Structures are given as structure tokens and as C-alpha cells.
Image (cartoon, rainbow, N blue to C red):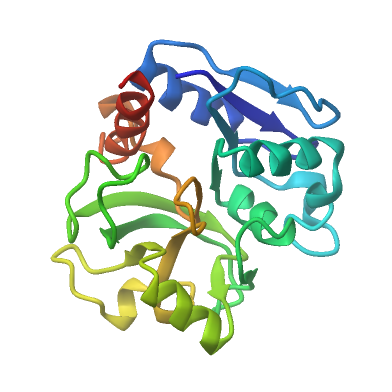
Length: 230
């Protein structure tokens, strides 16, 4: 798997993402500074978490207009794969690659804690090592993770099977206490219509090594590596 990770001023999760990708694929990803526009040779572009441009204006708003995002749009238009995690998800919505927006958490507080995600769609490049309905642990670390879209958009996402993950209890039940940021319909991640772009709010990359507290998130990256090895 030939992966690249975008790096914006203020992004701080690129090294975590690099570790996850290398563990899964055995290859070091390319670090892509935000002024780069050459993404040739890459299977996957990852937009990691953090605080691009200090989250001024809105989270992800400034990064969405950086030179590299034009290249990411072109990569996606060619059928390339894109993963946006946390701030990366925010950037993907601001750039128009995914619908909706990430608003302030309903508590108006920054959340930093574990959560559980229920897999809503298996069988994609991102979820190939999961079963539908499977629950895994990930890490919340955001102040603007409240996913919002209007009702027609939410209905379309549901109807087309584009909801990737939902916040859930450890047993898979959808309960209010599991949806800590207040996301519409407990949505934690969504796909593009062609299933090649994924925006995911929690950090799966933080749980890929027992030393860091667990390996729950490793399946996402192993699935990607397997998809590109086929």
C-alpha cells in the first residue's frame, strides 16, 4: 500500500497515523507538506487529526483551501482512496468531498476519552476486516465532532449505505450516553458514494499497539493494506 499523509501547520497526529499505516503495510508513508500537489503513485491519501491552521474560522476551513487539497480532489476524482480522521474529516467536509459539517460538541467542551464504534457497512476497502454490527474501541479527541447534515442528506446517507460507523455502547446498542458529541443519528463516520473516501471522527490510529492501550483500531489499517495487496 502506497500511502501519503498530508501535513498542515497545526496538524499533530501525522506520526500516529504513520505508525498505524506502517504497522499494517510494512511501508513507510510519504509525508506531504500542504504546498505539495504531486500525489502520483499513491493508492491512499490520509488527512490526519490535529488543529490545522489553529482551527481559525472553522475547524478545517483554511486547510480546505490549501494547494494540496486541489490535488486530493483530483486524486479522489480519479478513483483514489482518501481517509480523513478527526480534523481530516472536518477538512473533507469543508472541501466538499463529503457532505455535512462538524459542529461544536453539544457539551461545548473538548472531549478526550475512549468511545465505541459500531460498524454499519462492511466489505469496503476500509472495513474489509470488520463484520457488520461489530463494535470496536477508538479514541475521541475533539472539540468540533458533532456531525450535522440536513434531513434529506441524512436520509440519503442511510438509504445508500454510506454511514460507516456509529457511536454505540460496548454491546452495540445505540444509546444517548454513547453519542457524547451529539452527532446526528450517532454518526461517527461516512463514505463517499463510490466508497473510496472515508471521514471518521474518532482516532482508530491511537489503538494499534498494546503499548498504547490496545489494538482495536488495527483492523481498519490491516483491511486497507489487504485491499491494496490484492
